[in-house]
Image 1 (cartoon, rainbow, N blue to C red):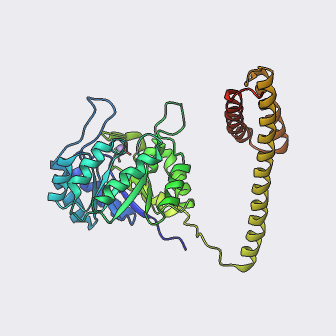
Image 2 (image 1 turned 90 degrees about the horizontal axis):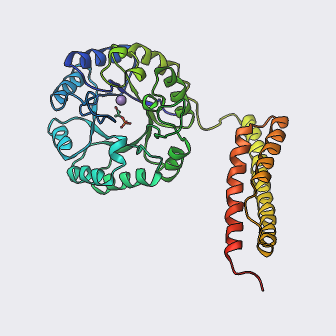
Image 3 (image 1 turned 180 degrees about the horizontal axis):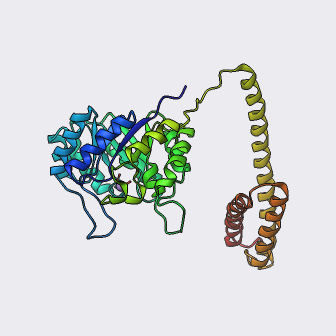
Length: 351
Ligand code: PEP
Ligand code: MN
C-alpha cells in the first residue's frame, strides 16, 4: 500500500503575522497537513515586486508553527539566510529553483550547513538539467546533511504552454530511478501556475509514486502579494487532499497478477520487436548514406521528409495512435538517421 502523501502547505509568502497565523490555523482545521511553509525572502523574476518580509517573518513562522503544532519550513538562498534560519531553529529549509540553477550559491549554502543536522529540500533547477539537480543533491549531501528531500516544481521554457513551468515528468522519474531512497515531493502550484490545475497535477504525482505534495495556500488567495493565481484557500486544500486517490503499487490479487504478467510479457516482446525494426531501419539508412556519398547527394531532402511525416501521421490516425506521438518518435529517428549519414559523408570517399 502506498503511504499517505506528506503534505506541505502555506502561503507563497509570509505577508503579515496575522495572514500567516490564520492560514496555518485554517490549514489544521480543514486538513491534516504535515508541515507549514512560507517564503520569507522571495526570489522574484522582475524587480519592484514584493521581495518578502525578511527576517521578521521567521518569528511569525515560528509562532504559527507553535500555535498549530506543525513543523515549519522556509526557503534559503544564501549564507545569511541559512544562519538566520538555524538561529531561529526553523524545522526544515528548502533551496529554491533559481538558486539550485547556480552551483556557486548551492555550494555557499552547503558550506553554511556543514555540521548541522537540519532537513533540506532541494527544488529542481529552473532549467531542465538533471545533472544540475543531482549536483545540488551531492553538494548538500557532502556537507553532511542526512535528511534530504527533493521537490519537483517544473521547468521554465520559452514555448507557450498551459503550465507555468512544464512538468517534464521524465526528469523527476529519472531522478527517482537514480536515487530511489530520496523522497520526492511534487509542487503542483508552481508547475500549474493556476489553481484550477492543482488537483490534476497532484493526482498525477501520486500515480507516479511521488511521496508528497507542496501546495501554496492563503486565507485570501486573490489578495496574495505573490503568486495569487495559483494559491488556494485552506478549505480548498482540504477538499483536494481528501479527494486524491492513493493507489497502491503492488498487486495482491493472483488472477490480476497473472493477467498483468501476460500483458507485460507482450509489451516486452513488442519493445524487442521495435528495437529490431530500428536496427533494420538504421542499416538501410547506412546503405542510403553510402549511395549519397558516392553520388554527392545532400543528406536532407526537405520534400521527402515532409512526405514521410504526413504519410505516417495519416497511418497513425487511421490506427487510432496519437499523431503527435508518431511525429515525435519520427523526429527522433530522423535525427539519428541524419547523424549516421553525416558520419558516413564525412568519412573518406571509398576508393
Ligand atoms: C516558492 O516555493 O514560493 C518558490 C519561490 O518556488 P520556486 O523556487 O519553485 O520558484
Ligand atoms: Mn510561490
